[in-house]
Each structure stands twice: as structure tokens, then as C-alpha cells.
Length: 220
Image (cartoon, rainbow, N blue to C red; front, side, top):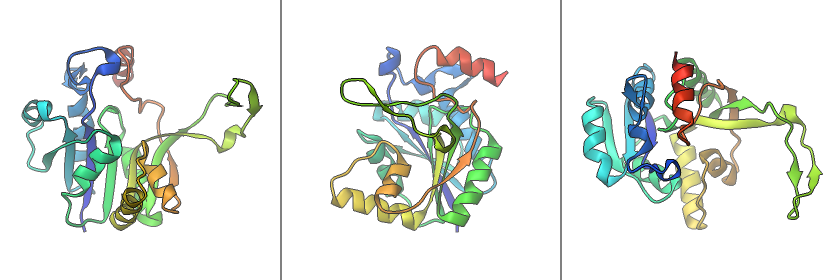
């Protein structure tokens, strides 16, 4: 059975205060979305890439990424709605590989490691160990507790799931009116365990203008 990557590209540049999608910004001569999609096209285990996109960007994105293995779907108002829009175009496959289009520096070895773990456990996600000491605070801003740092990970993408596990979790969330900002959380809600795979700190998410020169530096 095939493996399908869903690259989320339907966000805007509102937090950057720019008048176009932040995924159309360039890093080292290529747009963010090109780098993100090409990372998955280069993986032999991946047969198809579906890119979620805003309606006003679909023509531009399709011109930038002209590959027969890539298709485009209009995204929704939330992350979960965007993944669902892409997911519903898939008849059946082995693994669903979900990646933020704003993470253009994902490494091939991290994708491949996470695919291997997802094949074994049904659900796996890339992440990195938390470097800082984390504090849990109360409503008034006072420290309540300090979790053990060795148990903490900062989750990234890709997040990879068995097609049927994801389908079951999505149906449960929809039936109970839940909308999650993280796909691991969706699986957790359905009672499934997700294996964390240690990735790379360079797999940053382009969120602010300062992230562009940082990404260019990491690329070099």
C-alpha cells in the first residue's frame, strides 16, 4: 500500500504582517513551500503529496510545484479542517504523513526514521528534547510545579499515522465536536499511543520575520 504526505500550506502571513502567504517567502533561492514539499518528494517511501492551500494561492503554488505526484486541496479554517480536507481525497493507504509547510528544513533522515517507527507502532512524531527547565504556573502566574525535563519533548512535524488509526481518531473528534491544533493530540484523544522520534533542532517553523535569516543560516 502507498504512503501519502499531507503538507499544510493554507496558513496566512498575518503574524508576519505581510500581504501574502509566508510560504511564498524565499530561503536560499527557493520558496518555503517548495523546500517543504521537495523534502517529501525525495523520499522513496512516499508515493503522493497533497498540499493544502488557500484558494487565492492555488495557482501560484501549482506553478511553483509542477510534479505529477503533487495535488492541491483547498484548506479549511483550522489545522484539523485542512488535514481532513486532504484526508478525504485519499481512498486508502498505509500511512498518512502530516507536515507543516512552514518547516522547510526537515531532514530526509528524520522523515525516514519517523516512517519506520510509524510502521511499527501505528503512530509516530518527530520532536526534540526540551533544553530549558519548564515551569507549570497557576492562574495568578505563580509556579506550581517543575516537570522532569528528561520526559519533555517539543513536538514538530512530520507526524505519521496509520490510515485507519487516523480515520478512527478523526471520526471520534468530529462526532464529539473536538478540533485539535496538533495531530498527536487527535490520536491521544482517541486513546492511541504516539511514539516520539528524536529529530533535529534545525527543523524550525517559519513564524516570524526573524526566522527567515535564521533558516538561511541553518541552510548554509
